[in-house]
Image (cartoon, rainbow, N blue to C red; front, side, top):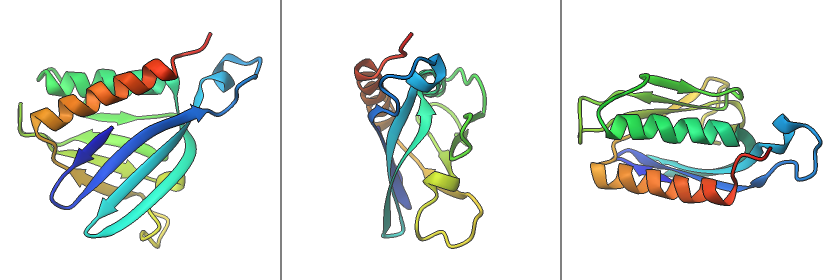
Length: 145
């Protein structure tokens, strides 16, 4: 899933399940996520178990609601505080999202321990493409019972 803007870009890819054989439902559904970020020419790649399968489903639902003009919430946060999303958009087709990168997702160029907020401004085509890409990734790594 890619989202870009004039200041930088954000890419999220599901690599695998963190625990392949755990007897616990919650453990079986944690995902290893690769995050590629860029900001004013600085680039960083981080890999960590920061989202679960059901949180990816929630992210998809949230992104669809923004694309459809029926925002379910201006903010989206997860159990692991490494990643979060804010909708700062002015309306349909004029998207502006703030991506919070904290703890395990914080870029290397962020020297202090505060979260880094990455602005992205995808157009409608890019937002729809990101939704489709994330849907395809989730099909490869669905919620496991």
